Amino acid sequence: MWERIEVWVESERHHGRWRMEGRRLLLEWRGGRSYEWCGLLRPEVVAAQSLKRLVSHPPLAA
Image (cartoon, rainbow, N blue to C red; front, side, top):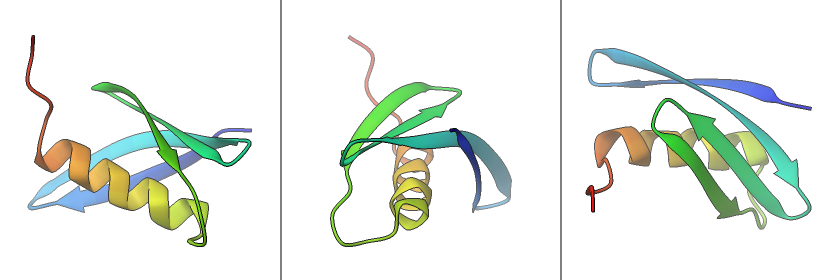
């Protein structure tokens, strides 16, 4: 089941959604998909931090 996540970076609000696939967290947002290993932290914390990192530092295009 997908869970929604919303974070603020500077003055902009960003939305995404996440779900667990085993021990991996799958995060989807307007820029694509990202997988993160989810260890001892709660999944919603991992999802929020990942989304903040992705919108703050977008990946370089090839």
